Length: 372
Image (cartoon, rainbow, N blue to C red; front, side):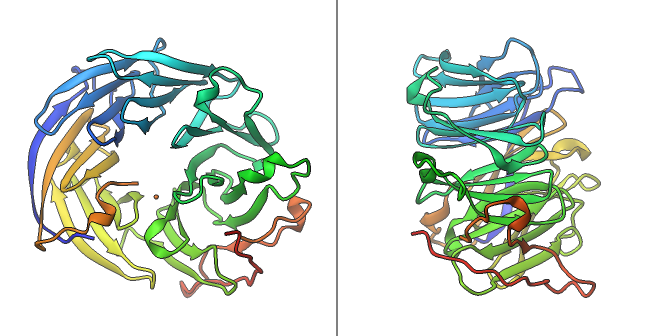
C-alpha cells in the first residue's frame, strides 16, 4: 500500500464530442492497455499521453453497461440484453469472437479467466445469474443458471473469488449479498447453492472479496454505507464503517479495492483516497482536485502510480501520483477485489450488516464452516 504525497494531472481526454449527455462510465486495464466505455455505445483504447482509438461500437448506441478483461488479447462488453467477447489482436480493429443475447437486460458482470458471470434485471419473482465459459461459444448447455436462490430485485454487483473462482459473490438492489459455490452445480441436489447470505438493509452498490484481509468481503451500498466481515470465521467478525461521507469529507463513495476507499465531491470537483484497515480505521491518503467539472466520477483504474478516472462530464483524467515511500508494495499494483443455506429462504440464518442507534455494529451470531 502506497502513501501518495502529491499528484500531477497529465492529460484530460474528452469523449463527449460536444454532447453534454455523453459520459464515460467504465475503465479497465490488462497488462498492456487501458480501456474506457461511454454512454453512447463506444469502447476506446487509451493511454497516459492522450491517445484514444475506438475498438468497439455497439449497434444501438446505448450505454455500455460493463467492460471486463479476459486476457491481453480480448475483453468482453455488455449492453442492453447483449454480451460480446471482442478479439483485439488486429491493429485498432476488433472481431466479435462470441456473443449471446438474453431476454433480460444485463446489469452486472465479472470475469475470472474464461469464466463469465452475468447478473440481470428483475423480470419475474427472482433476478437470474448466468455463469458460463466463453470457450463454449454459443453452446448454452453448460451454462449455470442461478434463479430460485438469487435475488428479488436487479443484480448490481458480481465478484469471483480470486483464489477459487467456484465461489461467486452477488449483490442486489434487494439489500442482500449471496455467496454461491458453483462446484455444487455439478451435483443433482442444488439445495445448498447459496452458502451464505448477508443482509445490508440498503441497496448494494458494490460487493467484493478483499484479498489482503484473509477471506473478508466488503459491501458498499447506494446510501454510502460500507462494511466488511470475515466469511471464514466461526465467531462474529464484522466491521461496520457506516456512512463514509462525513469521515471522508465527500458527497458520495465511488468504489473500493484491496487497499483504498475512493470518494467524490461534485462541489469541489474532488476525488479523495483513504486507506482502511481491518479494525474499522480510516486514514486520509490524498485529495485530488480539478476533476470532471463538478460532475460525478463514475469509475477509476489505478495502474501502478497512474490513476485513470472517468465521469459524467464525458472525460477521462490521467493522473500521475507521486509515492511518498521509496519502494512500492508490488502486491496490489492494479485495482482488482461460509454458512450453509437452509432449505428455504425463510429458514435462512442471516448476518445483519447494520448499526444500532449508537452506530455500534448489531451482531447476529451464525455458524460457519470453512469450505477450503
